[in-house]
Length: 303
Image 1 (cartoon, rainbow, N blue to C red):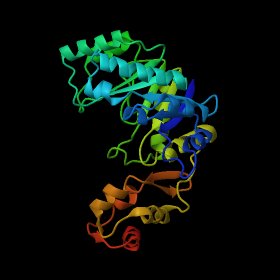
Image 2 (image 1 turned 180 degrees about the vertical axis):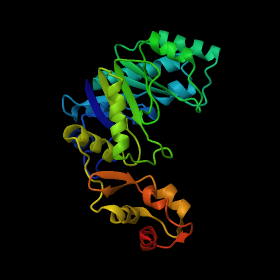
Image 3 (image 1 turned 90 degrees about the vertical axis):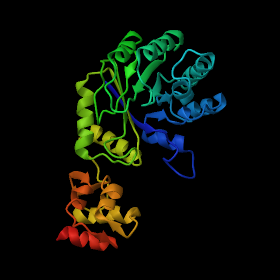
Image 4 (image 1 turned 45 degrees about the vertical axis):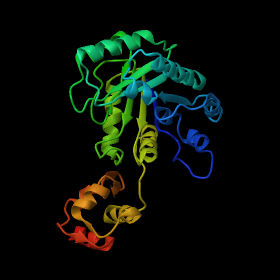
């Protein structure tokens, strides 16, 4: 079983230097997020491959025009753009092309026929497709899973929220967590659960791409755990002093208890040397009031 751990992009990994090269020294895998928004030049793509070690692995996100504008229809424009995505994969030696369909896309009988025709028409040139069908919380239609099975497409899910609906030799997960969009950080127990779920599915290869405001730290912490069996600390202090440290990063005062929970509760603190929890562990016990500074919050939490 091979496990690759990375994040959705490298742009914010470092400042003032070659972020991709620096990123590739810390991780051996990255999901390219930018290709979803803009098709890069092939010269730029070639430069990405040259800036990383030989064993470094890319996965590519399919451009949104194919899924959101053409809705996986076999029209010339969609086929042309898809072929460009496959060419990008080829230049990067990437084995995976991730396809995201929007939650507004209704899987009617007619739509399923159109999508099936698309996958029967395109030439993947050996690249494995990874499909993440979003559906506004509705259950994914059985016929959608049937398309995946017929074309050996990997069902992509957020493993912290659900499990894939079909078995595959590859497990591909984009990890956002249980917060508001990208506003989330994983605790030790959540990272352990992700690792356990991934291994129980017994795929030949596991691809975990963290997303979110603390994605580099989350990915690094899981890598450390897999290597050493323990998680590193996230702050310099413990307990309430750890809470104080993270609140001093960017809390805007005055702020209510509700505001604290929404804006700061998702962050991870060091409750003890061997235990990380969300800041909400302390914030939830605060009295309902407006706070003017960090000191007031810590004083109330002590009480």
